[in-house]
Image (cartoon, helix red, strand yellow):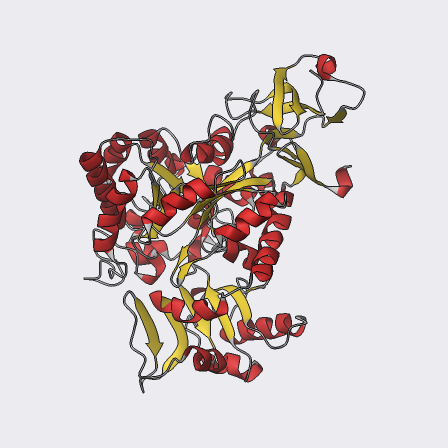
Length: 542
């Protein structure tokens, strides 16, 4: 059989072998026809075969981001990013300059990634700085961890937020000394604003998805797990996804994970209704806690900078504990957000209860983030077959290691045991890698660099933060492809370069195995093949 496309390289990493090798990948239709080492591909070459030769550039399976908020990530690729702001005023002015370029002068102004911890005064913002630039147009800016929002007075008017508005369950409306809302909403209170700010028409949602996919193909991302629950409900309309699928518009494979505490029977129906090569719904997701820096992560021992505080339980843990076994019974794999070690233990407990009640089945449950894990719980992760789904870029929350808040918040001894990736790998035998976009950018090379070096952008600490927890380059690449595919039961058709697998293939501009670690973040994808079609080629490399 003759191939439609042949990709030749001296550095093919198939996510199966431990090392790359010279050879070629032959593609027919949307499947891989052959992957061979060092041999001549002429037997697969016909008159119409397209042959691409890439020298020493790395050829591998497309990246599979195991933790993406698809709609928010699309917005992140569209609206202003405030991560570089050094003050409240600078952030507000950045929003104003971005909004001035927006042809729509009436709708919601949206932005992402403000973080007061990085500002000069470290004070929470207020609506006043936004009101100065936006007296009439509503503004909603998501916090860098996506666990809070900063809004202006026009937004407060639309959502009906006043001094008399009670804090919602699991959330907090920040107030001034007079009891009036300041414009900052935390945890579940964020949903008071986002239910309005993120209410999109069908066409708007399609445009947002296209914005995400346009960026993803340049990054070599060909599959994602779309974790949909947010404080105001699921983000992402499965029917819109399906319409785009049927129209041939999807250039990423979407594995949607709606709300664990929603209608599970409806999720089962959707699993049958929306099941194609590019769209699947067989996971559910929910939060067990918040994040360490705001003391909303649930920890076993008190925070070092707040004695007596072990994290406020802002999630409906009782409902989640009951929902996990129900999902397991229906064959729905569960994804549980857990940053603190107490939340991780709860997640393990709930999964253990599900398995003991209904027996082991095809479910591949995952715990997301696992920034802190008690020494006693690694063996339980192994025993229950829990998949650790991690995002290494989170360990470099700040530009410099000296500014890292974890040693202050947790104490140095505990902080040095955070993000235990090698220990998790040794316990589980596998990891799934993702980005958590838009909490951080979904550039895979950020995650790869961070996972194997464990340094901040200033190159510190020397040798890496807890170097014993480093992963190798081969491991990172395997977990970012095969590992994530395993997490969604698709390791026999996705995540590796092998005969019969879907032809989701990328080419990177260097041999990743022969360059210094410090060069990894400078890498770029020069070709992306998804479902057998070339969907991106770097103009400079053609």
